[in-house]
Figure 1 (cartoon, rainbow over the protein chains, first blue to last red):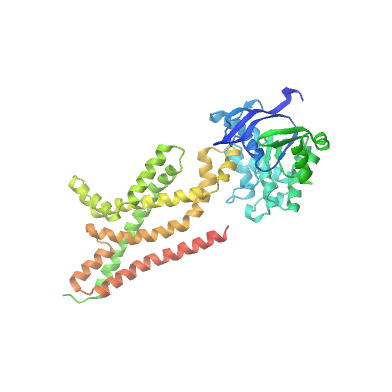
Figure 2: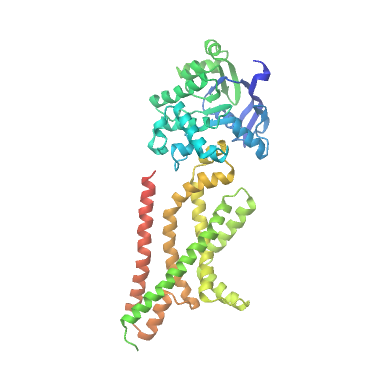
Length: 247
Length: 215
């Protein structure tokens, strides 16, 4: 992958929570349009890495760059730029429970992007169409299933037209049927060329959709490579064991 | 000794009006001061947190009666002679603000951290996060305990009687002094307080049940 195509660059990132080193020199690049699956056991640091890319955590050392801008630099301008570039979807959906689905989506459009109410509502309808929930425009989050809420959360991020979408174990709270409908939305997004970094336990999804798999272990990138290659020829015992346990 | 009459009861009811007025002053004043206190308590600035925390500790650790004495007799000695209504209003405002500030801080902190993160990731500024995401949810949580606290305010206005403010309790004392029917009079006074507080208690309970049902 030519370096100048990298839309996300992660170099030697170190993150510590007190005495605990959660990320120990992590680095990889993500090219525009690529779908990356970060896999690994609980506690391997994969969610923390994603939160660092989203600017929700500060790093002690190393460098993260999104769309050419360094993440985690102080200053509201840098932060605003990051928010324009990156969308984040959480395991627990995190919709705003007091607002309708439509308002969940239009809130940032009107407040942050300064769109008119009309424009924002039109875009809300558009992105809800993408996730197949046009009829839920006026529902409240609690009236939706977990899968539907997660699709709304994806739509809410998409509405802001980010360059990169981050998914943090977005199906972990869902049963298999609801997981499938969320993964279908994500596969669709990947096909449309969205750059996606997804922390996931769904090995089927990783195999099917990801271009690149990053296996994390003990706060390090233990093994990484193109999906088919990596799964066919695991180089490390840890990844072999991990793949074995997931089957 | 004067015979107890319907006029006396009427007098009590009129005095109850002042109990209501004082309660409203305390509640509105307490809310106006208490909300900034709550926001200071959850602020990123350590100084603001300490200032608000210190104020709340100070007031919560001091009897309301002493605050009343200070604002009425204390300020009087210093040359700021306040009429009893104002002195009582200020004291109850200081008192209510400390408690409401702490109740509301709890409600703000009860909104899940993930709501901050989600709205942060959407690019909302801190003020926008408060205005559109956090406070609307905190208000829902705050209504039952706030209404419950209003009961405390109503009952505590009775302390204003010691600085000579003629509200319900003081009126009861006055009537009793001339009729000496303490059982009848103070039972009536108690009944009027109860009539004021009971609907608030019921409202608090209903609102709390509704808030839980809405989960």
